[in-house]
Image 1 (tube, rainbow, N blue to C red):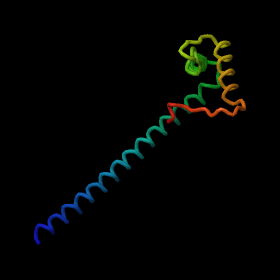
Image 2: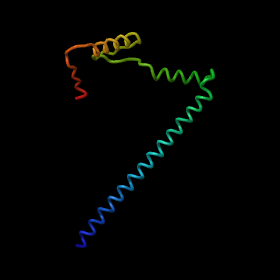
Image 3: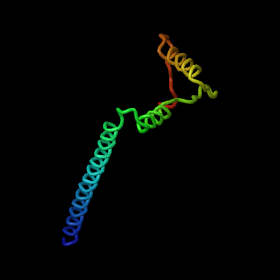
Image 4: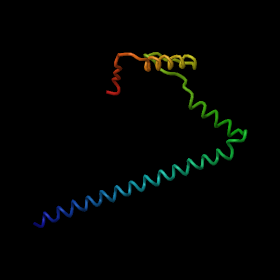
Length: 112
């Protein structure tokens, strides 16, 4: 009888430990999100101070943003396509085929 009571107490303690650990992880997560948000807001403040002026900071930021947002090459049917005109044409062709009305059912192996 004594062993049964000890097992129940042990299970209750492990459940309490689990719940306490879960609360601690949640608190850490919230703190990390708060720090990330503060960093994001600080960067926005720097942008507001210096971004609207025609400064070196502004131009360097725009260069970095432009280079990150640019697609330099894509791969279509195993071929690499480079150049903005060719990429635009390939994208146009792809979405035209994708969105055209046809009775064929498209099966994407990756999704399945």
